[in-house]
Image (cartoon, rainbow, N blue to C red; front, side, top):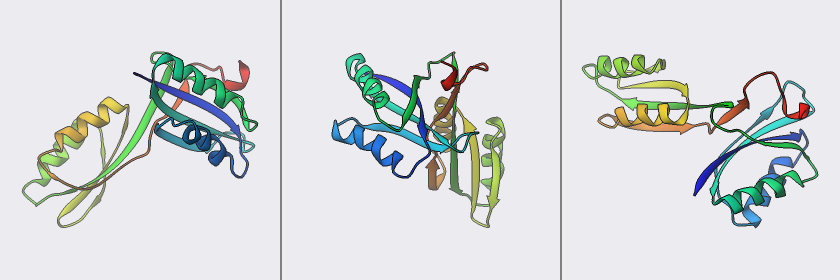
Length: 165
């Protein structure tokens, strides 16, 4: 099984997220990650969908998504030809003695401390999935109280847009 990252340009209309995600659920495909947001043009939204499967299933997913009425364009974001990022927010339970060590780990990854309380810290980190996974693994010895990840957002490198193709 391999992973495929799809960038999908859709009409920014009510129910479009439901129609696209419904296609996946009706066919029994699992979505690893899904992010959606309005583009520079308010008439469109961009979905970044991460799916896994064999080549036949992944090709079928891409073709079926492209057939949906609200979909304007579908493109695979391939490594080396695109930039993909994810955001993680993590609240770590720390004592006063542990705080400098957690700050040091955050600094190594260029993470931001966005909230500090007496017994916890909230850290924000943006990067590729491998970077975020490595960061979370280094926090393994501390109490992770809460963690949230946004899912992947990505664009093709260069000036070419989905509508230019």
